[in-house]
Image (tube, rainbow, N blue to C red; front, side, top):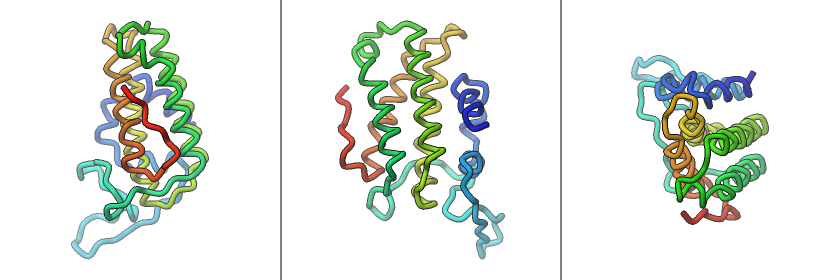
Length: 180
């Protein structure tokens, strides 16, 4: 079910809803437990440590520190890095074909599914990871739009941007930046 959902997202079927998708909906797909938090200000209860859909969803640090990682996150992000690195020259020169962008999207989607299925992050770090995953999936959806006649290159640029954010927000000291 998760892989099917990711594939639908990647193909743009749910792209319009992604910007409004609460992190809790993505979190529930991952199989994690959602713990409800009731605030004293009369607001609706929401899962503890998660941003409500009505709030702006942006990556942030943990009190100035990067979020912890697990092995699945490191390996998955290295896989995404490798997928982009192997196509970087073509992305930069705008010479990749539609099938290459589609293959890039499929590789990134598979890595995201592996990250989610094997996630062992604390709840707050996991919530931040889902924001990064949403950005990655937006890039995948944009890169796989060749059937609509749209230019897929901007999607690859979104993926590169998300890849740049990863080591700024997550404590993966073994993750080499991808110069582009």
